[in-house]
Image 1 (cartoon, rainbow, N blue to C red):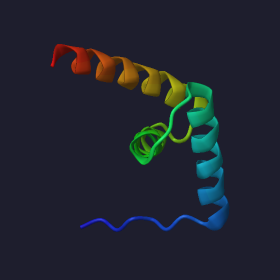
Image 2: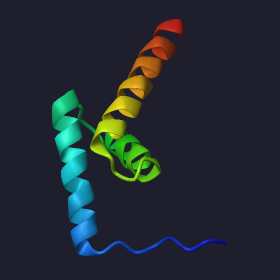
Image 3: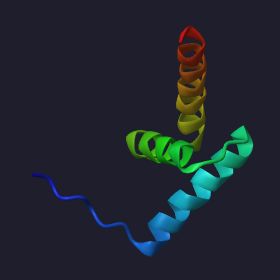
Image 4: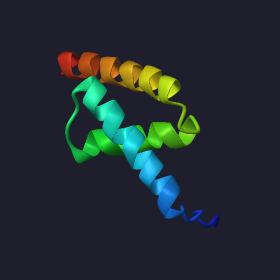
Length: 69
């Protein structure tokens, strides 16, 4: 089993700042959206532009999925 890398306080603070900035830009609230942004950020190496793109696509997909049910 692979071990998770421990983040330094500076890295964690930088990630939290990016998360807060993106949540403010998109007008999002809640822990679920924060987890989604953190997941996307880890996959995209914390590139703000790509996180915004992937998040926008995920929110659109979520909206369409909710309308179908």
